[in-house]
Amino acid sequence: MFLKFFPTPLLFLLLCSLSAILADNDADPTRSTMEQFSGYPTQEPDSVSSFSVDSQGLQKQIDELSSFSDTPSPSVTRILYSKMDVSARRYIKNLMGLSGLFVREDAVGNIFGRWEGYEPELTAVATGSHIDAIPYSGKYDGVVGVLGAIEAINVLRRSGFKPRRSLEVILFTSEEPTRFGISCLGSRLLAGNEALMKSLETVVDSQNISFFDAARAAGYANDEEDLSGVFLKKGSYSAFVELHIEQGPILEEEGISIGIVTAIAAPASIKVDFEGNGGHAGAVLMPNRNDAGLAAAELALAVEKHVLESGSIDTVGTVGILELHPGAINSIPSKSHLEIDTRDINEMRRNTVIEKTHQSAITIAKNRGVRLSEFKIINQDPPALSDKSIIKSMQAASQELNLSHKLMISRAYHDSLFMARISPMGMIFIPCYKGYSHKPEEYASIEDIANGVKVLALTLTKLSLY
Image 1 (spheres, one colour):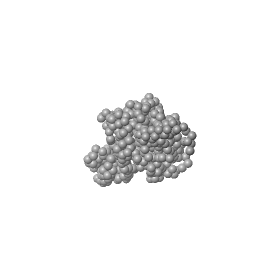
Image 2: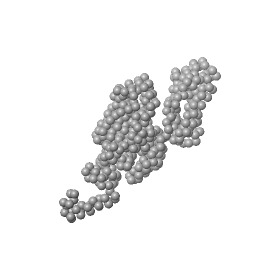
Image 3: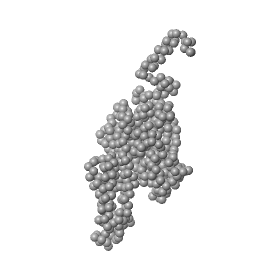
Image 4: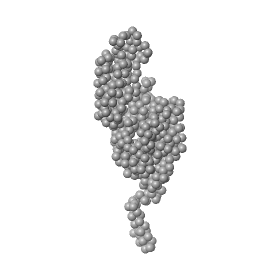
């Protein structure tokens, strides 16, 4: 009714303007109105030139975070729930707050920083990684995916972007298995691993400190031993994307800026114990020995043999721990302990290696007159495939940024392996020096990190607006 009060020429101009708005590239009038009133663009930025990474500030944060370490620079040692871990967590939460994120934590210390979208009822898009570090490692593993994710949020804010779906940065608890022998503890629990939740009731570290005592000392799990409140339902996020150093040499050797992960290899961990008779190294003659140490050595070689028999370069096996008792030069080992890691992009092939290794352990024990007291599979996880739509978004982002990229698999496992059980998943790799990781020489240039942050930021815009 109010239109009758407008003069005819003014009404004509108003209608023409409205028609032009609706006709302009099929523009959504609701979106246009939101842009006018919010002051934020609600579409992808017209030009990625507006994406400005604060490289100097990001490098400073990486260096500062590395100072929270139980070993001297250039190494980093940051073990779950240690004083240094707690201090590093506080540092990250502060950065999240400075970036305008709403911060919360769950009972085991997974940390979430959310930027609410203009349609907050939609499931959010998540990104993130971990900051714990094995003894004497480097300062980039995991850290790039946490600090880089926070900087990606800052990049989007500076560009004027406003997300449709909320964006959430996650710091995962204990991706490394250092303290309690459980890798990706936080993301496994988020994925609803009830067996893990049960095992945490009894697990202890090398100092005989229980998981819950360690967690409470760090300020977590104060009111509960039922950790089911940590579990997330499938579909809690519409997408998850993790930025990470490659931890391998391919991107650097081929001069490629970005790796787009298509799948994550399936890991398995095995603990093996042999028991023999032991004895004096000089007095017991060779035909009379039941040497648990030689049984362990023979099994280590058998692991290598079975891996190579698979015929695939993607099958790998490692005996990362081999311990002998009593550990004296003049004493025949009476006990031996091995921990074996084997993984493959093909689950059946990986499982074949496990079964062959088990049969070899039985045969070795029989032939050497020792007892196979334990052959325990600690974890036997399936591989995870990246979501095709997320792969396309990462490819498109790389192309728009004029960055060379290639499709590749991840032979190392990451929190993304378990987030894939909650939501569609993708990973972005950047080069690292000689592929070094888990050692002080680990290094990624700030230029490569900035490229990864830009690809992540642009990917997040695409996924947020979907």
